[in-house]
Image (cartoon, rainbow, N blue to C red; front, side, top):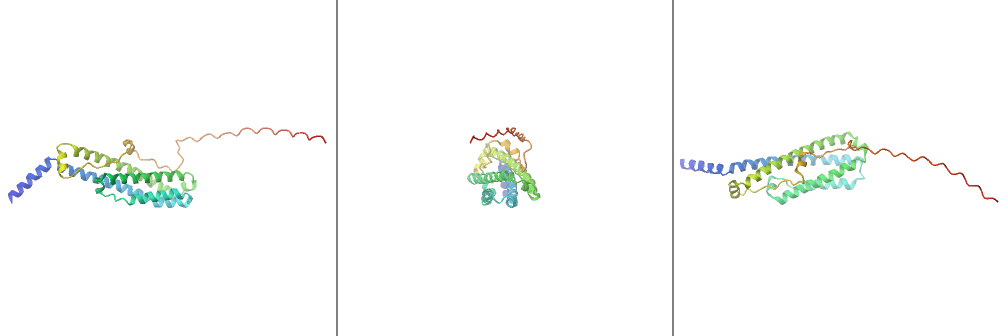
Length: 222
């Protein structure tokens, strides 16, 4: 019995000294950050049916735009965003591409709403606007935290001698969100269904003064 306890103690000490416990802790941190990303993306997806129905009530003729949003949402929902996805770079890329496609479709839908003043003044639509704006803020924060967690984890996995432990237990670097400028993640996209106040309206062009009507030509002699 004592020998078993001693072996367990030695094994625990070796694992702790080689960074195993640290890797496990950081891995759980990445999973937690990922869960929040998925949660906020799901929150956005849940808003879309009401948003589409609200727009449809005033702009049913925008059929192509509405279909594109609906199809993009369905594509996002078809991807299982489980923690196992974090170990599959290809699956992670598909998830990111699907979310990007949905963001693009939503942006197009919001541009279309500018043509319908009655829609923009609808109380339900205004409430959806506030919820969507808040969700975009949460998505930006969640993505930023995930990026930071993965960067820290990946750095540790590559460092010696922890990289040897990671190799033994099959712990590899995890895929991360790719953006042209990571600073953009810190700033949530602006969701504005109204006229941009920062853009000045062009001054009305005055119509030119009417020219005097020419005198009628004399009738030809009989």
